[in-house]
Length: 479
Image (cartoon, rainbow, N blue to C red; front, side):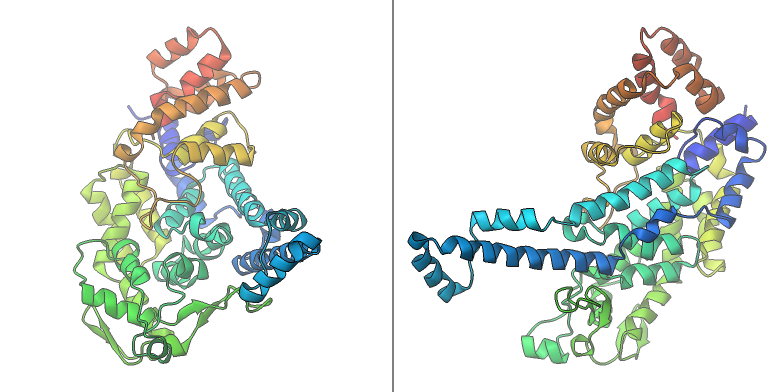
């Protein structure tokens, strides 16, 4: 039998970041209304984000640090070469191949010019994590996580821009129109770098002819297969190639070439394939950056895109195999609203199918970790420890295994449950003197706690054991 507390808990688990003390009571009078209200008035991102570098500034900071480090190393190596025994061989090597950096020179450079990569990454991760922990419900924050994974990039390839890309391209567009989100993601230098489009040039372009090179298909293929239409949706290899031709010339200002504009998006007409292109049966005559933008806008409006997006949203929030009726409702809203993502999210909340299924979906590691911390009322956490935990659990932040992003099904995560137990034991040990397992059962799990769980918790000899048992219970692992 459904009760207000049960529905509030489901709202917080399924659509939010998980309950914390007092949150069930706060929305119990109208859980669905609370979710809809958050869509209309999303909480602001922490004000501290204003102090974070933009993606372009971050990549320039790293380019500058690398250049200064190399200069320091060369100077240190030359100083070392002034020693009589080494001078002749060093001078001869420099004359032949340019300055060589000794091990001592490299160490001196690293000591003199710290690498900004990890601090930039940690600062972005800290704010993102705190936003999730401090959210009253966290529905819009979950949408940020979903769309960031849908349009994923990886720190393995471009660590400087990962957090800023999410802030600049994803976060401002999650409740707007899909076409705007699509353009913002594909147009962002981080995506162009990640999917190897920076050097993509038309075979018949000025640059392509001079260098005997052609287009890179990575971006066009992933846009069609992953970001819009989905697999087996009717596009052909010819569509991939022609779409790739429209994207030629989408590049950036090389970070080392400009201290003021390095890393910014740039359209290089000399790299762009000339002439019209036909994609999915439609001819595009534009001769500049607008050609690919026109293709993207049309892809955003395709029925196949509506179904693909609706299916992924329903799978992420509701069930690994979402009810077809729910997908149909959401896809219909997406199409009729012109890709309005807020309207699509509201359709998901309004659909009875979203509330009919029991909380059986296994949380992804990041969801489980955040919901566990929220359950004990914490709003801050050691960022390094959190990032280490996600890496151990197989979901390192902004580091998906492929452009497909992290998977959203139980089969992909069930084998990692043992690693969650290790982390649950460690976390429970750290907070045992501050967290009461019985309070968590009463105020966080509410009536969802089974009699078996309550009995097992009551039989634990220590708080640490009881807390660890709670964190590994079905009530915590699933939503």
